[in-house]
Structures are given as structure tokens and as C-alpha cells.
Length: 167
Image (tube, rainbow, N blue to C red; front, side, top):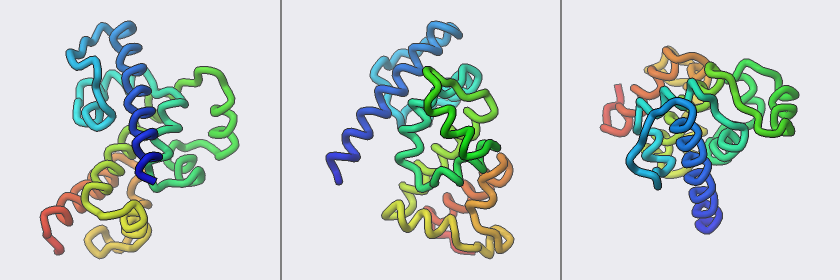
């Protein structure tokens, strides 16, 4: 299992570097660290802004999808498209998501990164996402991930859990 995660980590880091190269060519944004990792990418807000505007490739989305706890139906719902459209995009050569969808992909990547830091396993994180939370108005956190305001509420709650605040 650890070897699979390592290969997945290498693949996603490589896909991020491809995106960064595209951003540098198309947008003129320069980054000093040419060996940027996925985790470093998620912390660079200006680079994320450029990535959203440039669009996320299906290849990078596919790698992000592999390391999140969300299934295809979840992703289709988050992106506001049908699962059939998502599957059609997969077979299109060099498909690039629109800005709004790219933003949602990166938001969910950030939430997943934080959730995996807070919880011991992906299964625990997914269980938390599917369990109604009193702090979130008795809604399931996963329901709130459909919009930016809800995502911020989920991130705030994850940060509270990480700090041991259970109110």
C-alpha cells in the first residue's frame, strides 16, 4: 500500500509540475522551485489563482480524485455536471476543466489534504464527512462542500478538531 501511495505521490507531483510549466508559459508567472510538490502547490495561493484561471487538466484531476475520499457521483455533484459528462471528459484528449470547476477541484484537494492531516485514515475522514455535525447545523460536512462558504465552514471545523476544540 505504501508503494502505491509513493507512486501516486510521484505522479501527482509530476502533474503539478506540468501545470506550473503551462502557467509559466501562458501567464508569465514564475516560480523559483522547479521541483514543486503537490503539497507545496496547495500552499501557494497565488499559484492556485493562476491554476484556476489556466484550468486543471483531466489528468491532474484524475490523480487528485484518487487521493480524495470522494466517489465519481460526489465529484459530479461538486462540479455541477453529470457522471456521464465526467466520463466523457475523461476520454477527450487534453481536456481542461473550466475555471469554476478547476476552483472546486482545488478547494476539495485542500479540504482533503487538511482532513488527512487531522484524521488518522482516509476512512475516518470520510466517515466524519458523512456524519451530521452539531457544529455545522446538524448537516453532513460533505453537503457543505458544494459551495465556497460551506467549504470554509468545514475547513474551520477541521481546524478546531485539529486544535482539540470540540464545541
